[in-house]
Length: 164
Image (tube, one colour):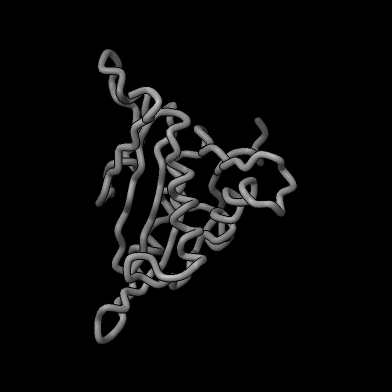
């Protein structure tokens, strides 16, 4: 698997996913909710993030309007292999690169249910399946980077339905 086949992170302002040490630019600007998806390899964590982004491309989601993103290039890189324009015969989603740290994707949303629309940000990340499986091994000490759990407001545990 090449570097282009995984979700990675780049420098601030590039439009790519953000690393934990780059989140301050978002949290200082907006009210921010950090959402962390965790689960085993191949359970669909990155696909869920992509699906949310694609829903916002179609219109409001749950009363929220898309208000921009600091990581559009990161979202588009992940989405590309699932689109007809990619030329692939079988849609796919790029895996999160285990060596990229904790990449976060950003969505700015506007809650239109208030008299004055409330602008806030979502920072979305998925724990690589490898890190999740290592952390869930009770015989080994947890090695999850602090960025995964330190600032998370919401942690979503994704289960593999086939294994249930």
